Image (tube, rainbow, N blue to C red; front, side):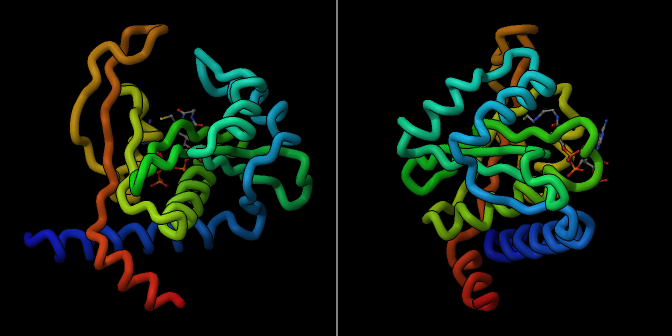
Length: 189
Ligand SMILES: CC(C)(COP(=O)(O)OP(=O)(O)OC[C@H]1O[C@@H](n2cnc3c(N)ncnc32)[C@H](O)[C@@H]1OP(=O)(O)O)[C@@H](O)C(=O)NCCC(=O)NCCS
């Protein structure tokens, strides 16, 4: 398969998966940029989701001191103080390095992560980003399922990446061809 055909397939697949996620959950939730007022709830959710969680101060520092940081929260429409999920990336030139994404245990397997990541990827394109990357634990099958469906592919391993268990990280990349992204953007304008 040629690279343009492959990129087209991956973008079409990504758009279909995003549309399914939107149909499933968008009537219950909405995405907005993370603000300092969300940091305490996000840190609480982080503690529920990760064995080595970032602190509230770490999120505040990201929001207030890191010009490359872009963070988002997924909120419950019926209870907007409830942070259901969050995610973010660093803009490194024209690449997006996803730092974290997590969903409250009560909201998992309802396409919350897929929906949030789709929104982040759309924002990233407008932000001048084409390719996106992340690390994921080799044992984290739900996360890998989300990323694979959206067109992220395994491109390498970081040995013993995670401090707590020494587990390896899979390095995943999403690399649509630029002209295909621009074409799709024009179609949706
Ligand atoms: C990973 C995580 C963000 C996924 O959130 P989510 O809202 O449940 O994700 P979605 O509902 O959008 O998609 C989950 C997919 O994983 C699949 N899945 C769930 N458990 C799975 C398993 N054990 N093996 C393979 N796939 C699995 C689901 O079937 C679903 O795919 P589908 O939509 O095709 O059915 C969530 O589990 C989480 O917060 N985990 C803790 C934090 C974390 O690991 N973050 C990622 C760090 S890289």
